[in-house]
Length: 244
Ligand code: BJW
Image: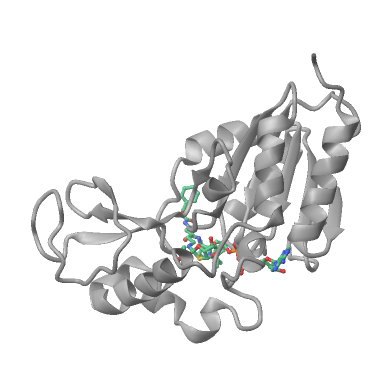
């Protein structure tokens, strides 16, 4: 994108953008799915079978996210800068990540399609609560006061990701679709590039490696997101005429 032609941009981020902040990805070597059985900790059936185990898994990840060892990296900061500074553009940020590093980097808008680690939901009323401390299966729900009614506000396998209508709407209309640090293994996020491309968008993938959807992108930028994304953002901002 070398001029001011493209106006609508969709950015889709995955675990790779937070890897350099110290948060494990899922499928890389030493990733979360090496130590945890996906269906035990990330499915509605797993939660029904052993809610304590599932709460422990998310307690552990929430505690790490909120510890002083984790902070947004240069890639999160660059995305936020692009959202704030690119003139004549509408940038819609979709993240599959359940961390809050885009918000902490200053992103003015973030859609969490797979939920958020710092939120819990009542399984009856569907009300969502911000809860930052550890949760046990016996914790009483703040709305119905029943024990065991709180679940992580996370999209597990077999569940529908949040705000799909909005995601499809923005993706089908964008001029530029950028995916950062996602393996392209999990649907429906993995097919958004096809939707964008079918509707005429230029498509760009940032990743450490080739992914199983790399061929769907027009352009593939290889390297750590903390280096490649800020460089790209800098170039984009410098090549875009600013309105005074
Ligand atoms: C770097 C880097 C650096 C590292 N710089 N890059 C058979 C066929 C097709 C689909 C299905 C199927 N069977 C079942 C399905 C559906 C299923 C699915 O896709 N399964 C596949 C695994 C086969 N999907 C679902 O069930 C979803 N729901 C659904 O489909 O509902 C139906 C529906 C569809 C459409 C509309 C309406 C309804 C729900 C998916 C829920 C995903 N949940 C998880 C866990 C919960 C969140 C959590 O606990 O954190 O979400 S799974 C996990 O994977 C997590 C992630 O958000 C998601 C994606 O992972 P991500 O982000 O791509 O991470 P990795 O680890 O895979 O990749 C990291 C990448 O970064 C790598 O490529 C690295 O190279 C790169 N990298 N360091 C740049 N420094």
